[in-house]
Image (cartoon, rainbow over all chains, first blue to last red; front, side, top):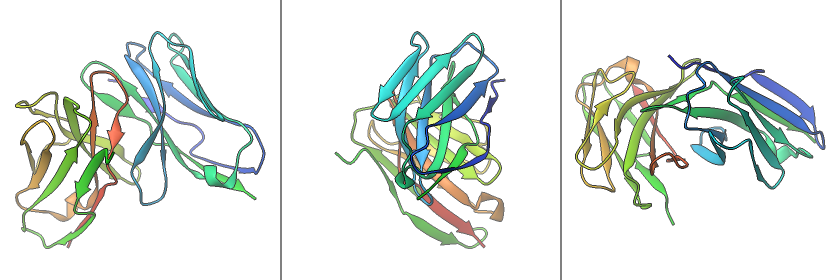
Length: 110
Length: 111
């Protein structure tokens, strides 16, 4: 059974700092990995999707990497801003279903 | 482009009442999903529909039924609500192994 872990559960940084969020998974037989953002009381917003054949994807200040063999993905946020404060979830897509991590709650202080 | 639309956004039910959560997507996606999100439990799959006319159970299907009405719409029904079904419910859709898109959620309280 696929298990997805996100560490740390919470992170607080000052504005302007570069930061890395981690996602690890136990079964490397995946189709893709997707990073989401969730604001309080809201739905999940897709940030980046990395297919299993890819190593990384970039969108603006966000860069996500994937190392299937070691079961790890990272989400790099450059020059963090208070508006980046949210919970970030990763989801691993395997045969038939996706498995979600519990998320990392990020607070960026002005 | 509305994406995935869920109704209602909030609902309070009494134990034993029934209700249907509605979900519609306008992206022509084949696959649709219902999840529940609970503190400390993460997102758990209730039911999914890989294509129009098919539905399958997920991790936590007990107490729920679904209908894939057409390609756009996928509804979730609670026949006899229980306090354990108090949760936030999310509908999602995707095409193949591309990005999944989520609705804004339905916050359900069963008293």
